[in-house]
Image 1 (tube, rainbow, N blue to C red):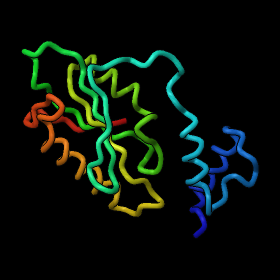
Image 2: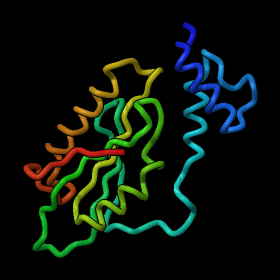
Image 3: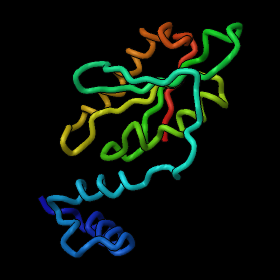
Length: 159
């Protein structure tokens, strides 16, 4: 299926600005090239901001989450809970791309953060990412006690 003219113009502009080879962004592989490019945009190298605990869990066969719990006094627990969905227009992004952001949110806001790695398009058709986002929010609410969080103080956010 060919790209619509407006989309083709955006792909051509991105190709020229990002110095892709002429054949890198065809109709068939534009999203794949975009994903590979976005994986290159990692946070600057440096010291990783520490949190009290950080680990990964499988919500189901499709969804992995990374959980961040900041170091706080016991009298502040249970903490508010933030479920974080990485940006990328539902076609790119991953847990690592937003790791430093989630660590900062946890530490500065004194909240537990659940960073969601949902299925991406075009490999996973709509409504897969939406279904994953919903399933992850329900899972986070149901498992909040495992990461010192209060399921009644839940926020959904992302970039």
